[in-house]
Image (tube, each protein chain N blue to C red):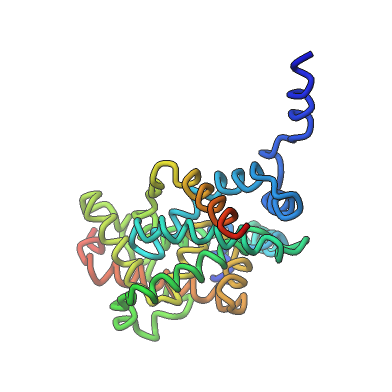
Length: 215
Length: 74
C-alpha cells in the first residue's frame, strides 16, 4: 500500500534521457521541471566546458562562464520558441557570454598567424597543392608534447574570426549552418573561413617545421 | 567544391549537400582523390584534440546557483 504514491510519481516522471534537448527545455519552460534542466546540464557539461575552455584559454574563467550560460538558459527559457534548435541557441548564449567575459578581463587574442599569411594561400588549389607536397604526417618528427603544444598555440593564434569557426565546427562538431547562425555570418562565409583557417594552419606548419618536408 | 569536401569530412554539411558530395566522390576519381588529400588538412588540428575534463560537480554546482537565483527573486 505504501508503494502506491511512489509508483504514481514514477509514472508521472518519464525517462528524460529519451527526450530531445528542445523537448527538455520546453518541459522546463512550461512546468519548471528541475529534472529536465538537470538533464540538459548533464548533456552539455563536458561539451560546453570544453568549448569555453578553448575559447577563453582559461579553465577557471570557463567554469564561471559555464555557470552564467546556464543561468541565462534558465532566465531565457520562456523566450525559447517551439521549432527552434536548442544546440545553436545555447552555443550562441555561450559565445556571447565568453566575449563579454573576455571584454571584462581586458584580454585580446593574439594574431600572429594573421600577419604571416599570403593571399596566394587562400584558394582551394593552394591548399590541395600544399597537402600534396607534404611528405608524410607533419606529426612524425616531433615529440607528442611538442606537437600538441605547437598545434594548440597555432589554433590560439588564428585570427579571432577564423578561430571561432574552427572551435565550433571542428572541435564542437557543429554544422556549417549552425556555426553561421551562432556567429551571425552567411553560410558561405562560415565555409570559406574554415577553409582559410586550414590553409593558414597548414602553411604555418610548413614554415615552422621544414624538416617534415624532407623525405 | 573544396569547401564542401572539407565540410563532408567534418560532418558539417546538410543532408542534401552530403548526398551531392557523395555522388561526386563516387563518380569522379579526381574528386575522390581530392577528398583523400584533404583529410591531411586536419592533421595539425588533430594534434590538439584532447578533451578537457570539467571540474568535478560543475553541473551540480551550476544547478544550485540556478536554484539560488530563483529563491532570490521570489
